[in-house]
Length: 414
Image 1 (tube, one colour):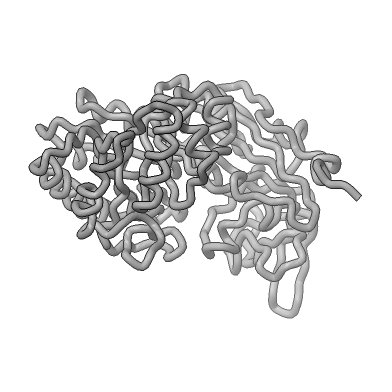
Image 2 (cartoon, one colour):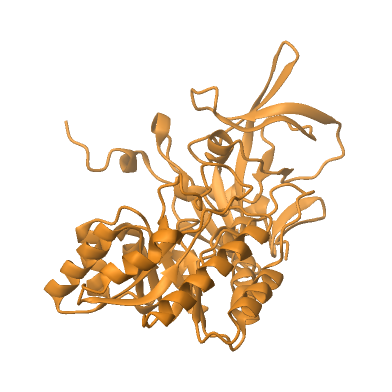
């Protein structure tokens, strides 16, 4: 569904006019559609049908407690990459028994907290990590379920910062060495070697590399089972992309899951998926107000009150986000850079963008900002991080207050 549509020349999220939110909350402000989040999650969950599975939402995409609670109530598990994310999941009412812990740099305190909470599985990325989890599990007198994250060396067409499946990347272990690592891991008495994990990258618009990686993982599982390993689950990662530009075409969630089901059918495997962006990206916008118009030579600038500290994706990845006026008009179109107040030339939300003419005071919606928006925000230039709002039908509520100036200095002393 597209939760953001025009009615009577005003942009709505579900049944709420965005101008109403701006009038009461101000800008910059993130707005999320609960219906879109749930629809995307249920597309994954329902398409698997009777195939044993867990959809572990990758909360690094958007970790707001209200979003996490919404998904937890719908039956989601969670993919975490830090102790802080585990803390958030538990605060939001998530079930630790449906949590997988990924990441290359888990610390001993983080692992110990996860063991204490009773999470489902650790996706391990090195032999030293296996040894550490074994030692900490022994100290607690528990068995820790683990899956070795394998790197299949699969080429993906995505930004090189978010590609994770090549041997040159820091993630996982070489799939060619995996059998030997599993054999050496047999000596760890407090590990349950019951899974294999794989994640090759993010924002993938073509499912072919994902399926290539899945086939390699399934072949490895067959080899491990032949050697007596009780491999019961396959964590096949996430990474399915979304359309940031109108002309982009992405695989549907349903078609993607159907392809996975065909490959795992009859293998007696519990499938774990870790979608993040494809659940929340299109569910969110960043609202920002136009401050000034500026002409420098032939260059036109639209200066707004949101900046790279609020949404860093354009500066970090040269990412494209569509920009929509909250109030439609039939004025002329302009070509301009949309820039923020931060003192960096890299502070932009769009460059050389053709868009409807806007005047000071006009509000713009930066689209597809529900993933990797607020979670990557900062207080650079001593700017307060924005408010977050969740819309449910014709109702809305603030689910994170805008930071105060006191928030900026909390914990500091002279």
